[in-house]
Length: 228
Ligand SMILES: [Zn+2]
Image 1 (spheres, rainbow, N blue to C red):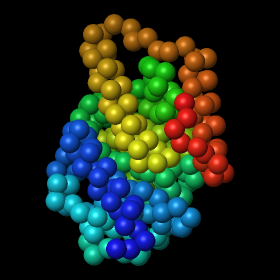
Image 2 (image 1 turned 180 degrees about the vertical axis):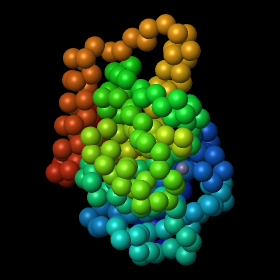
Image 3 (image 1 turned 180 degrees about the horizontal axis):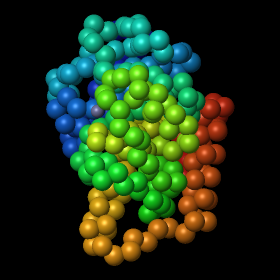
C-alpha cells in the first residue's frame, strides 16, 4: 500500500469500465489522474493489456516525467497528459482513446459543431480536430497543450483518436460517452447529405458559460460535485 493506492485503483477500475463499454481496446489509449496538491499525476503503463492491469502497474510521475512510483514504463503519451495538467488547472482527469466513431471523424478532418445541449454543457462549444503529430513526440505534446487552452473538454486527434478531459475521472468517463454519441449521430447525419441543424447560438453560449463557471470554481478549489 502507498498513499497513491486509491488513485491507482480508480485508474484501473475506470480503464476496465471503458474497456467493457468498448471505448478502450486491448492496449490502445491511456488514462491519467492528477495527484491533487502536487505537481504529479498517475497514468497507465505502456503496452499492457487492460484486462491484466492491477493498481501496482500504475505509474506515478512528476511534471518533469520522472517516476515517483511504479516499476513499469509509463504510457508513451505521458508528456501529453502532464502538459494538459500544467495548462488546465480545472482538469484532474485525462482520457485518451481510439474510440471508433470519433476516429472516423478524424479521418475526414470534420469537427463537431454544437449539436446537443449536453454537448455544449460538458464538452464545450465544439469538438475540434487537433492536427496530426506522431505519438509520444514533443511535437504532439506541444500541439495538444496549445489547443486545450480554449477550455473545451473534448478534442479529436487527426488520424489518431479522442482526447477527453474532466474535473474528475467520473466526469471524464461521462464525457467519453457524450463524445461518442455526438460522433455517431453526426456521422449518420452527414451521410444523409441533408443540412445538419445545430442548437441555437444563445443556448450554446449559456451552456458553455455554465461549464466555464464550474471550471473557475474548480481552479479556486470550491467546486461541489453532484450539482446540475
Ligand atoms: Zn493513441
